[in-house]
Image (tube, rainbow, N blue to C red; front, top):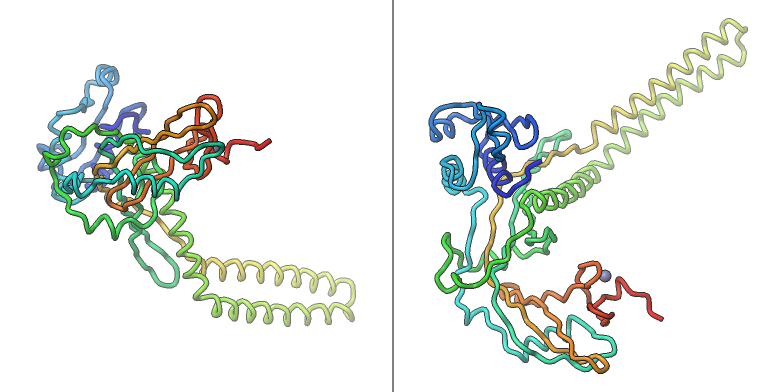
Length: 354
Ligand SMILES: [Zn+2]
């Protein structure tokens, strides 16, 4: 399990580049490189990598990889040329991303209700650089026919699966370098990449399973008719055996019973084989990822609740032009209905009304 950003990136990039990885222990991995990458990295096809200086001391064969190591640079370069796992920056101007106080209030009022409070007031807004990840998966379905499909999952820096923002985001101007207009905006670092990828992958697996079900459903009529035919055939055979057993002597009846049991087992096996043949198996492969780094606005509002002046923040996404609702202070989920409890805003999710 990768335990640092650099380890996540290096292992993910190596895997994406076609390397075979063999984890050997804590922060220690053997990587068998594809020929083109090995040549680019100096020739050795097998590298033992560690990301921990203590492990490096214990194993003199291990290469200690850290920020700025030539391997990292080569991988970034390789990743860029392969168009896998690269970073894109929004080239929008701050003007194009702005939000007027009226519009901010309008969006907030549509998104959230505050209990026991006066209507909120706009206070201030501040840009931050947020990052959202687009992760591509290749799915191979295997049944009577073999099909491949792509699933693209958008996920934010906390691992929350986003809706279908692809059509909106891909229309935006993106650049490979951080544009000067955003250089001084504070950057919110994402959660560790492997955690985000795990969530994106789980989502892709779910989508693929749904798709496999649909494929199965489309072959359903044929499956049902083959199944009915199989059942009818064995029913005939087994009824014959039963009829014969009624008039048979004891020895003969034992033989017929044995044949009956064998036919039953045979039928069940054929039905299981049939089901297996029609079930659509699927495998999900990680293919690429692209960080989309762009400004969001932290919008602060003042809310007067009973006799207290309180503050609440919401995040405005200028690409989708939507306000992400404030989060419940207790569970962290987006909340549409907030009430002040001692020190935090709590959503309906976490409170029991008296
Ligand atoms: Zn909650």
